[in-house]
Image (cartoon, rainbow, N blue to C red; front, top):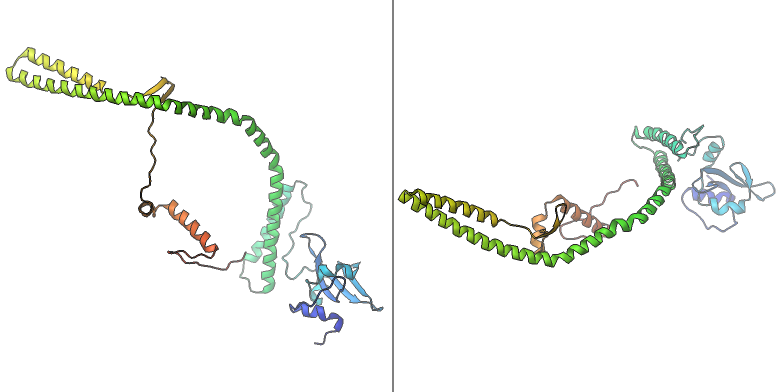
Length: 325
């Protein structure tokens, strides 16, 4: 089909070939543009009037073709699409607009209604596979619209929550020192006690050792006395053996551990044993822990990070798949 020279740029642009663009040098054709950020597209027509001068309509309103040119030059549409939209139809690559009327003034409630309407539109698309480019375009636009809804919800959530966050920070700041400094000072005092309690524990261990030795000595003596009493059938000897057994039991009780401590019941500080690992062979330990879920999760995270950087490490390959995003 022969194209009038005035429409050559537009015809080529419809095929994906964009010619040189110069500010103010508008070209005849049919286009679309947004009147504000993230606003809906409106139809644009540019043609030459009977006097040879360029005429432009933006959303059926007269406009200066030179002024709008750079806003529309990369958004050509067919004449059929232009006339359909002017007649009240929706853009072929956009999903139906959500049916919204008599919306509440509360932005939270309004967004809930808008999301419910978008759910209904999405449900229609999800009923059947995508088979045309127009359907694909409409779904893509719908996902963009949902992202915009999420952004608005996020912004409104932040605004509503911010006073509580600010108030919480003020409360935290007010009480922070009174909450943290006692603990810090308490730990400092406990560390100051360490040397004393460790020495007391050393003395206690020495006392226990000697007490246990004495208990063992008395027990051996009691056992020997019991054997002699049994052999001699002597009541006095048996009584002495029993006395020695009681003495051995008492000394064994005396040899029981007493942890070094300071303070009183309810306010006692004592030595406690804190256990931690001292890694002597990292590779061997890693091999022993390799089947633990948290280790696998950590390794997978590091491997994914390497894969995204294009680094293929021993023991892994880089896999890729294409998904709509």
